[in-house]
Length: 132
Length: 138
Image (tube, rainbow over all chains, first blue to last red; front, side, top):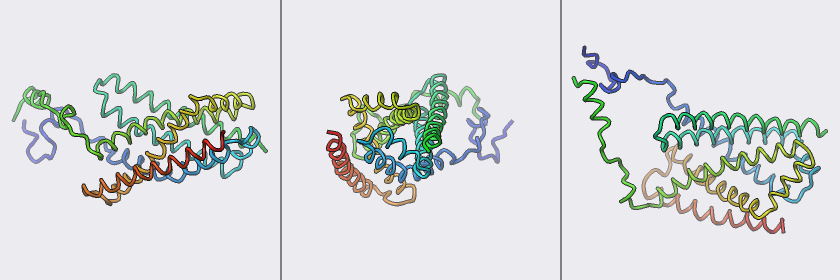
């Protein structure tokens, strides 16, 4: 049985029977997209923190409750966790050579990123909606 | 055609892997690359702390006051400073990466020029931010 003739797949690839996952450059592209989003958003975040360094509770809440600040801060938090999660995935895949541990860490990172980004959005929404 | 066993043994042979870290001469480029990863991990931890801060602010006056008090402690300040420095580095070196992705500065000499540029800008911007932060909190 010589399936290899005419196929571009390597003999090892044929033996293992693992085909393309059809994802291509998805990970790479999303990492760049979120990086482009985070470049201006993180400047905004640092500016916001410096601006509110000595502000009291009411001022901090009122500032974040402004619609454009709230929306941009939500975008920042979601992009931040999405970008971070992609980066941690690469690092785990590169350095963890124990398959079960690798998978456990990947699931943990992905779930945590979702949990914290949803929590951040809820927190900002609550501040924005109860501060009118 | 080679059998599965042969293929497995050839692909799983204990060949030395490159780069050989024990005898590897560190260069500016490789060190800056690993720092990019390190600061990335630090920023992920910082992101969780930002989320906690937002939750404290949403929760009410007492939670926020507690969070703010922790930020004012010495270890709180150190964590914030570490986050800030990591952000400045990762941001600058991230732009360098986006430049590479767009096809700019890929030859060896240019990677050193842009690398040194990142380090100089990192020092200047970090110093300015830390000075501004310390001056307005004390």
